[in-house]
Length: 73
Length: 268
Image 1 (cartoon, rainbow over the protein chains, first blue to last red):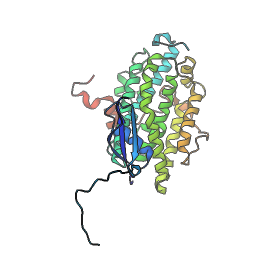
Image 2 (image 1 turned 30 degrees about the vertical axis):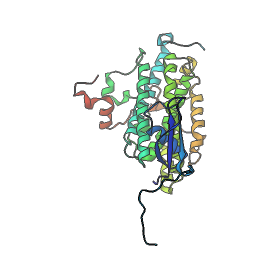
Image 3 (image 1 turned 180 degrees about the vertical axis):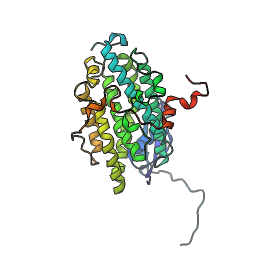
Image 4 (image 1 turned 120 degrees about the vertical axis):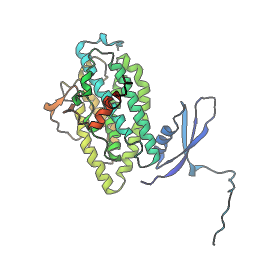
C-alpha cells in the first residue's frame, strides 16, 4: 500500500519552551500523520505536538544543494 | 453520587458482577495486546508497525491496571485452573485466533478496542473509586486508538474491491460477537453494575453508545449498525460474556498462561 506525504513534527514538553522540531513521519493523510507522530515520538511527556505537511512549508532561504548533477539535456 | 472507596462497601452480588466484568475486560485487553503485538512487524508501512506496537503496549498495560483492581475482590475468579482450562479465560471470541491479516487487526481496533473504551468511559463516570482514580490516564491513552481505527477503515474501504470485500466480511463476522458481549435484556451482569453506580448506564445504554460511536466509522462499509442482530442467548455465558470457551491454539495458550517461561523458575 503506497504511503503519502512527509510531515514535519514539532513538540514541546513545557509551556515555557517553544515548539521544537523533533522529526518527520511519512503518512497517507493528516489522521495517519497525527497517529504516527504520537506513537513514534512518545519518548517524552509532550504537552503539545503538531504536524505540518512538508509541502505547506514556505521556504525563505533555499538550501543550496551540496552536489549538482549534469545530465543530457 | 456516593463514592465507593473499597469493594466491601458493595454487596456480594455486585462484587460478583464486578469481578466477572473486570475479568472479561482485562482478559480481552490482554488478548487484544497480544494480537496487536503479533503484527508489530507486519503492517503495510513501518509507521503502522510502530503504531501497532504502541497500541499493544497500552492494551497490556491497561489489562494490568484492571487486574490490579480485580485482585482486591474476594470474588476474583482467577485461579490455577486458568493454566489448563481455556474456559476460565473471558476474552471476546474474535481474539481466539491471531489476526489473519491487517484487515483483521483494523476491525479488532475499530470494534473490540472501542467496545472496551465505551465500558471504561462508563466506569469513569461511575462511583467505584479504585477504578475512577485509574481510568483517566487509561482513557487518555485510548484516545488515538479510535482515530487510528477510523483512518484505517476509511483507507481500506477506499481500496481495491477485494480489500473492501474483505473488510466487510471481517466486520460482519466480528460485529455479532461485539453486540453479544453486552448481553440479553436481563441477566447481563452490566445492569447490576449500573444499579450499584459502578457504571453510569446499563447494558442497553452501553450497547447504544457503542453503536453510536462506531456508526460514523462504519458509514463507508456495508455494515448497518442499526440492524437487528440475532443472538442465541441460551448458550451465552454471562460471566465470560461470550459463547463457548476460547479456542486458543497451544502456542497462544502457553504464551498467555506463562507456561513457556515457568520452567525457567523465575516467574510468579
